[in-house]
Image 1 (cartoon, rainbow, N blue to C red):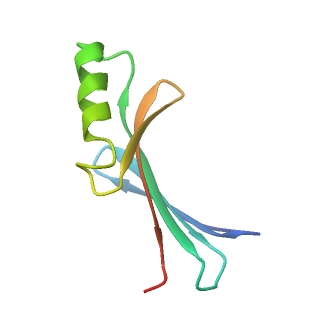
Image 2: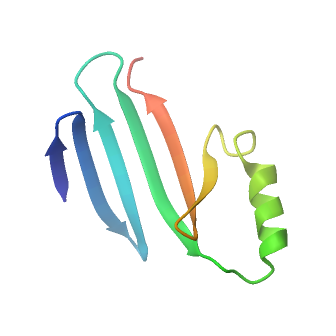
Length: 84
């Protein structure tokens, strides 16, 4: 599905069991492309070990991608400028 709103576009699609969201803001050189998806519902098995692993991977090991907890779900998120 593609949604048009005041600040740009929001695209939602299914990739296997994962709902993926893609947001594109405005239509200028300062546009941002944001992609996010919930990966895992919490609580999880051995949650302390999982959180430690994700925090260790955050940013540096994942090429500027980050992990977050939103509404008791582990979410992966990345954001890039669309300019060259």
